Length: 265
Image 1 (cartoon, helix red, strand yellow):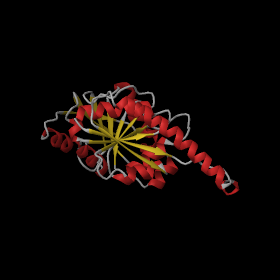
Image 2 (spheres, helix red, strand yellow):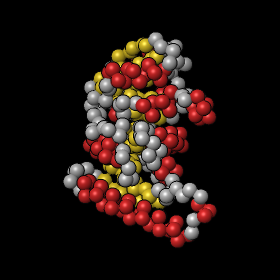
Image 3 (cartoon, helix red, strand yellow):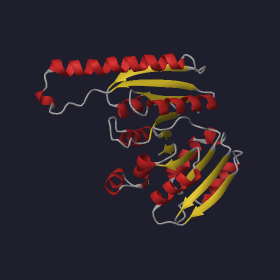
């Protein structure tokens, strides 16, 4: 886990993303890859717009993003980590997926409560689903990310949580403590097996169970109470359609989590 891919885009969550990516890159002795994306303006009734106006709006977005990238580069110049920058124009989720082939982890945000563009909940969901890379999604209000803090693993025995945990081993190895938390009924794969797997990588994990019928409600409550450095979760145990229609666990976490999520699929 050496290549950290960061979304650079001038929005309310950028500072939290940048600080988390810097903390993560330093802890992993990695390389920070900044992907600066210009998202074309969404034009209501675009068929009524003139081509000249469309071009003007796009150029304005490019100019604003170029100024933002210049500020980011100036900041990175004093951070004493290896970094590089790429630029692209188009859909944020799709471009992140396209540029993630050699990324080990992607830094994004938990959804913004004010619902302003870009829709980080949807972007993070799409990136997790389409890239098969772990995503560190941080709250917009975050000021730092502590890789050496306590890690909470939301264990449900699914293939998604097993794969996410396996991908995150270099990060979990840095944690001061790890808790395997199982909510409700036991999952398909026993939690004890997860603890044994971690122990063989030199990680001693505590096992805990919480009885609750609403997994998302219980997990959000545990995150608020425990305040772990991050919570590791596996995404989309059901189809994407069911998650959208019925407000699944993953979507609630992405919208409401008070702590960073390390999420994979």
